[in-house]
Image 1 (tube, helix red, strand yellow):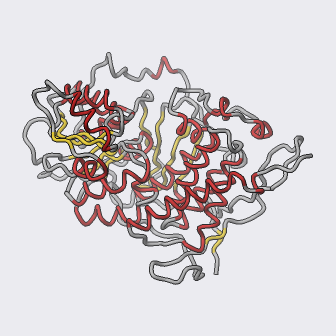
Image 2 (image 1 turned 60 degrees about the vertical axis):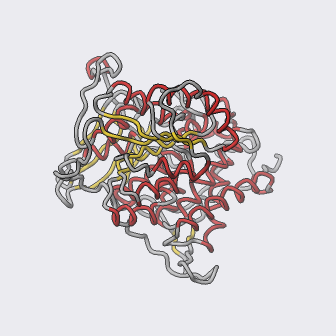
Image 3 (image 1 turned 120 degrees about the horizontal axis):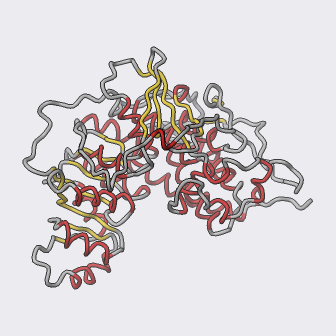
Length: 473
């Protein structure tokens, strides 16, 4: 038996035509349904069973209640950073540099940017560092000649795990990208560390495994993403059952003002022109397709225990309101501020306290100067990613990780000009459809990683598929 999944009330999936003519107003049509089948762990592959919308596992933060006896350190709060040379890591270190009386770094894990890592070691004096590429250890050691307080160096995946579970760390900032962030996050949870969560795959792919583990070890998962931080801040003090709806705001991306019929002509350069700010290529394309928001819907479901029917998306071009909640009595609470990722990162580190910030480096929001805020509903035809994300979310299990991995590979193919812009949606849908017979609703960590890798390979194989090749007019 199969279930047709829908969003927000009856999300049907997308069916893309194989042939598009130059005068066709839009290259995507929506007559079909995204039918989900599932495979329970241990069941025979391909077994068809009824797949009901799943309740989320026990979630943190839900209602945020700080514990009176939680603080267990003296002086500045000790933290580890996984992904120290990336965007999240460098912004976290900006916060530490400005607040040395509040935070100190005990361990850093980086990828391959040895020059930046050496600078970080000299400035923040961690006890332990890791580099993913073991071949770079000799270069790192040579660069540290003459440094008085040399850290211990552990390379590779094991080194990242050791940074995440460093015995002195109270909180771990997970800024590493992709499923590579799952194992160190799990290691940190098992070691009793609170998680300052910036790695999306932790919940999108790993939610069914990670959240029960977090509950078991009584740790806090604090969202560093601006939208989820906004929700987290808005629910502070809410009594149980008071949350009615989550409202995620989206900038609308590069094509928010484009007519739908022009999307078939999109070039890579067009997708990388974000109207509000400069970001990395992948997140900029995700903002254009609105896949970033679809993935945030899944994260919000896992983080806050909200049903998918109770999570909405609204286009807010100014990006000042970072997200909102509606309470049972119809009050709407919002968190506002200039777009600055350091603010949500700071709150994950300082919660439940608030750290006073310099007005020079942290400009205060002037609503009178801002003038006006606008909102509109997103166009499901322009942004078919929303339906795909809601459908995958309702399927649950390994499907959400497959959605995320397929999207990541599709965006890579688009940036490399191997597929068209609208092919991104087709690649993701076809990958999710292919995964239906293999869907595992309660996956192990190994199954989560396996299907992440499978989705990337399958998505890559579609670039030469006839279903992505338009028939000439």
